[in-house]
Length: 195
Ligand SMILES: Cc1cc2nc3c(=O)[nH]c(=O)nc-3n(C[C@H](O)[C@H](O)[C@H](O)COP(=O)(O)O)c2cc1C
Image (cartoon, rainbow, N blue to C red; front, side):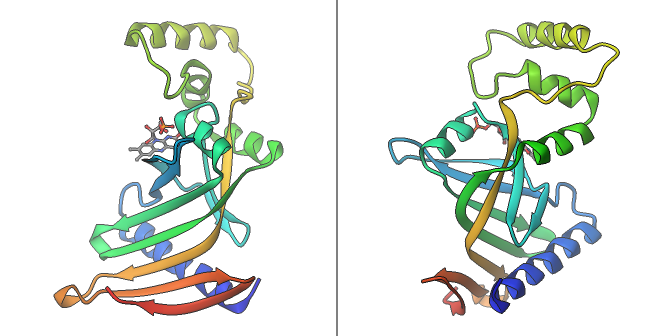
């Protein structure tokens, strides 16, 4: 890890901690942008569950729209905005699945209802009615009664390894401060961008 990459991660940790300590609800919510097989962009909010030098981790249904898009094109972008702090952080890079062991460990920490929900919901697929989903919830609750809910094989996590990290600090007269850390030819660089 180069010094500039560790500097960027430390800076992320600083603002992330600031957002949490400020009491911002869903401070770990981030927009995740992916691209489909036709090159069309798609974006939705997911929760950051872990980050370190290896990358930024979120969990989802791998057969969802985002899961299929990541299979076609493993490049993705993340964007955080903490309004109360007037801070934005953007990242992009290549995404890889987390290990089975890592996904199992995280799944085990989820509330039982969410674990059963992961089995019941064919995320992103059409749903005939809420009743169908409720029925499936009951069926899986019965199936896993009196035992731990195993992680569904189609439910796991992805880790985005950043290639660029931009810190945007909102300032007066729209003269915001933008600092971009980027990886070029294997070297991390740091520079300012016009607002
Ligand atoms: C605050 C918030 C947090 C969310 N967190 C997640 C998450 O961590 N994982 C996930 O799969 N969906 C999460 N969602 C739902 C997604 O935004 C989205 O509806 C779902 O993943 C389906 O997206 P897709 O059809 O593009 O794959 C969250 C939504 C909100 C508003």
